[in-house]
Amino acid sequence: MDTIIALATASGAGAISIIRLSGAEAIAIADRVFHPYHTHNLAQVPSHTVHLGTIAEGDRVIDECLATVFKGNKSYTGEPSVEFSCHGSSYIVQEVIKLCLAQGCRLAEAGEFTKRAFLNGKLALSEAEAVADLIASDSAASHQVAMQQMRGGFTSEIAHLRQELLNFASLIELELDFSEEDVEFADRTQFKTLLSQIKTTIKHLTDSFSTGNALKNGIPVAIVGKPNAGKSTLLNALLNEERAIVSDIAGTTRDTIEEVLHIGGLAFRFIDTAGIRQTTDSIEEIGVRKAKEKIATAKIVLFLYSELEDTPEEVIAFVKDVLHRSGLKVILLHNKSDINTQNLEAFDRPIREALIPAFTDTIIDISAKNHTNVDRLKQVLASYAQTLTATTGNSVITNLRHYEALNNALTAIDRVEEGLEAHLSGDLLAIDIREALYHLGSITGEVTNDELLGNIFSRFCIGK
Image (cartoon, rainbow, N blue to C red; front, side):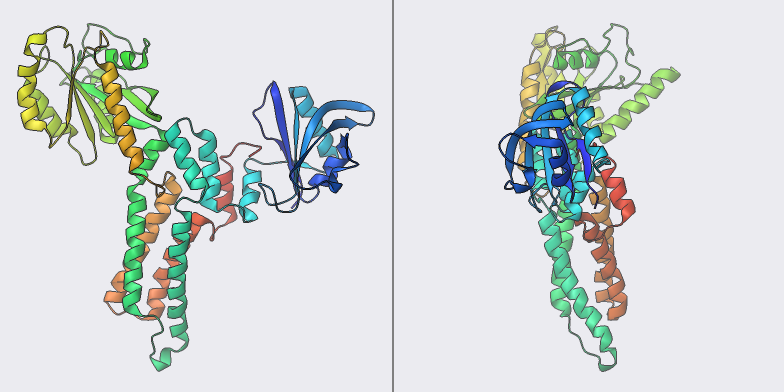
């Protein structure tokens, strides 16, 4: 492979910029532009050492900087590498890169350093993809998930099961060579047990996708209720800023408004929706439809109500008819509790009796306008976040490509099981086994093609 170069830190002025070179000629090219103070050249120094010197073009000194040397395959990319830690001037960066290009480097493509790490066996493909997730992580939870996957996560589990399946596939393929002798090398009973184990593992992983996606991109929280229930006021109270327009006129919110707030180390995507009611206003009707769509995709629903706009029967009916869904967390918020404090318990009693614990386990009396119990709501959400992260463990997927590959593998394994039950011949079983192996291998990178790799690494930033 040729030698590539790119800025590895963010572009723009800063204290330090790191310029990365990688490839067979990385150290030789660095030696032609970098002049260390305390050694003759970088080719003579040990790997993983840092040296102070100057980068110069002839007599023109461009910068005084540090050069870090990685020799052999002992680098991120698995090939000789040098990193220049320069002063963070855009001009210096431009001049250093231009000088190295003149010595035989070429500019790296997006994600090319990580792509080389994969091709050189330093990372599995799923681990390489986690690098992009790590860079994009903006919460403790998304960072934790990305780190788990970059360190192996479920990759080793998939690779082990794939190897077990490959061993049985080899035995079945061997049977084809002795088809005239009617012998079986693969124990069908053991094979059924293995397929059951693989299906259990895959099902666990596909079930984790919804949670993993929420940890990665933020838990979607829909704020719903009738017009004038106080949804926009609550969003403003949660964010502690005037983000949504608040008005006494019912139906002010016509479209959804989304904002992210970090609570308990997890990102929550709060979605202020239009008030749900029957309306003849065509624009408001679109807003109501969008509100119901957001409810369908949310993991948590905050339903606001008050005795000023609702009856207990309406609240109960709404929760049962619209909000009840497996895995959905429903939090009831009795809003405007500052207006009529005497009737709060009496109003909520039939709601509690009808809904707790079958539909929801939480009712909080709040005043979004006065920020009363808004902190308590945040505590409930933080507690939910801790429960969510505690149940994920290492086996969680956040990548849609992995999710689709696992589902495809599961479909193929289902066909293998059906074939075993129908006593199909080994050659027919082998077709579906190969397909399952292909989809599992596409996750770890044991099966790839240029189009797949190009699509994955094109989403990386240049320099990584």
